Image (cartoon, rainbow, N blue to C red):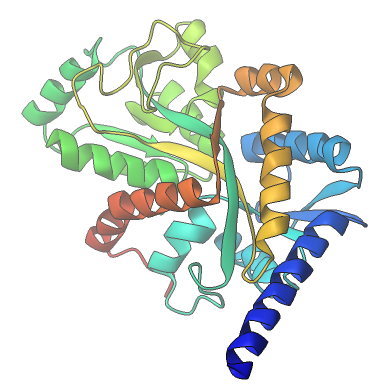
Length: 322
């Protein structure tokens, strides 16, 4: 009986300690590690979030870019940080899904070394074509590609990136053989289509919008779950005839494993308030991003669903860093 009372007392003290940590956190500067080079849509979004969290939490929240190794350097830094809520990771598909699938020497375990805090934004890909391509709808592009296997090229932001995997998922689900042409980023990929070196663009929506509005690209479908406010007349891929297809980048926060749940919950509640603000929605709209909130459990389910979609594609392509 005494042993049982001791265990119950220990559990109660642990819960009380966790609650106390949540009440006092934060009492100093919080760092969000951006595993990419500064700039770009993800950088703009995480800076927006950090500014809002500073106001909500009453402590400075800063973003530090730690690029390199295809996001491995930044992610490793967070995985090895103390689990105290003061070092966080800009969590995207690259460090949490792609790298674990392609890098056998990865210095962290994505499932074991991190705890997810929350999802806050998604940015859909846009399937667009050069005006010379004789396809005005997604269905016409699919029909054209089926009649000419391997003869149409699609541009992505690089081998192993989200747009590349999205392009191969499109090939699989549409039953076509578009040939992949990797570029060193989304902007060069769009330029490749504008110059006619490639016919199809499958990168994030933001760098394509101005060219679509100028008539230099023809938008066929948005690869998100709903239409974009930047291009409201462009259907989703599902609406255009390929149900179940989604290809979007996502942005969330993760923390080192072992971070107290009280801190995670307090941080997520602050994220919800920040992303619901008029300023956040205005900035996100200009970037073609969607405010997509998911708590730790829902975010985990989201990541697992993305793994289920993308890992078979990665395996079929035999992508590896070795």
